[in-house]
Length: 133
Image (tube, rainbow, N blue to C red; front, side, top):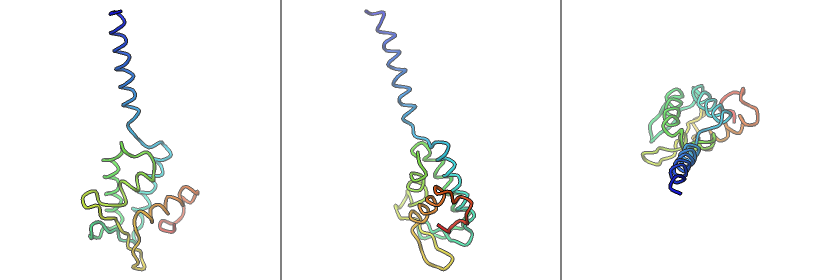
């Protein structure tokens, strides 16, 4: 009986190790492509101003910030919706929602705006003009 204990324990450790590795979330290839495309689209929205904690940021800075947050939280993100919610909707420090100042001066909630952009991408509108969604 003692001879079976070691292989059993080793098998249990292997199974638990594999389960832990699989439990770590990462986006699928298609979701990663959507996330990358969203970040790229934001970087091209040069007529919009991105508001974070009351400070104005241009499109390039907003895209860099989203990418940095994605790189930090990547293991917690499996979908483009997760990305928007975790990396592009609100400040981790203050909890304040991000806003986008449109070219006409109106303000939109970043979560709502980016989810509309994502819907456009999912419907095959990926080559359309950013900000049209």
